[in-house]
Length: 185
Image (cartoon, rainbow, N blue to C red):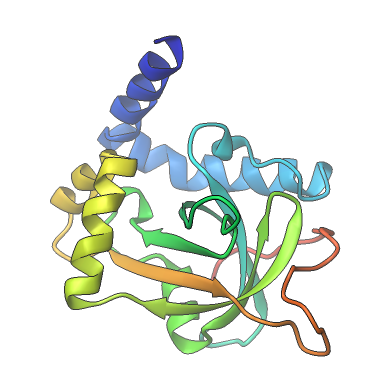
């Protein structure tokens, strides 16, 4: 029961407006630093909610942009790491996060998942498919309902799926190295 209480406390705190003001500046910076120091093996925020580091080309610049993100892994045993849902909640702030525009412009990207670099393709979810995923997402992490209630925009949901790396005969991902990083566009 201890872990359940801890999760509920984190969910309650993450639903507050104060958290929405501070978290977008603090959490990604901490995640990027720890991710670099552990060579892609640890994301602090992933201790409560699964996370990836998304590397996508900037919508305008075309330059690689690295963004730590919470995600909802899809698939069961033997399929873990085959696809994920990325949530453009922006902590319940009014604008879509920059990384969502980057994926709309350049859907081929890469995620670092559990220390492995994996080439992926992103697809914006719409209509009935989005509605079904949204329901599952609210069961997975209820604070997203609070984020959606705060904003007039529809929170963007993306399904990212593994793709074969160029010049690779398998799609199991890369070496797990994660160096450098750029702020989101």
